[in-house]
Structure formats: C-alpha cells, structure tokens
Image 1 (cartoon, rainbow, N blue to C red):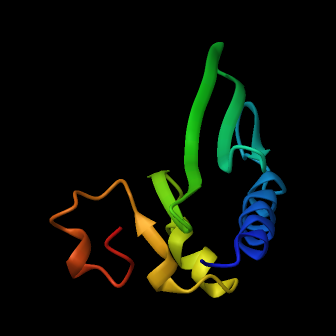
Image 2: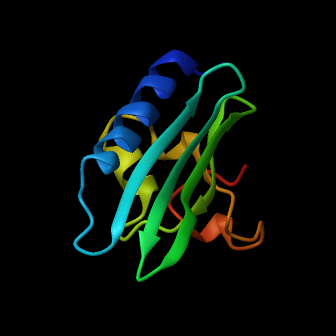
Length: 111
C-alpha cells in the first residue's frame, strides 16, 4: 500500500499555494478544504463579482484505493502536474475526470 500520509501533506500544500494567489477582479478568494479523515480535498472560489455570487469548485481530489484520484480539475495548468512535481509518482495519480478508456493514453495511472 502506498504511503498515504505524505500524499495528504503534498495535496494540502499544493492546494494551500492556490489560496495565496489574489484575484485581479471582484471580491473573490480561493479556499482549500482539507479533510484528512475522509481523504477529500477541494479548492473553491467564493465571493462576489459584479453583483453576482460566485461559488465554484476549482479542484476536487480524493485518496481512494491507495491512489490520488483527481475527480475535477479546473486549474489553469492542471493540478496533476503540480502533484507529481511535488513528489507523488504519476503511477499513483488517476485522472478520474477522464473517461476510463482514455486513461491508458495518459502518463498517469489507469485506476
């Protein structure tokens, strides 16, 4: 089984870095939701822009079956790249938002 505690710490650190990036418009902020008990991790944008309420999930990651599953990724460069650069092997990262038949053609785990 993969060492999950280092994965938890890497995911939390990568998500935290996004919370430090200010928005150039609106009254928006990015928050990291870190749940080490259930192994779910999210980035959400919350606030107001031009009188409209904004609540958007930027990324959702979970640890499942001893792998890092990226369930949703709306970041600019792709959070999988950042996770692998931070030390999580690509064969431990599943692009869950990609159809199963496409995953074998990526450089990441199939499942």
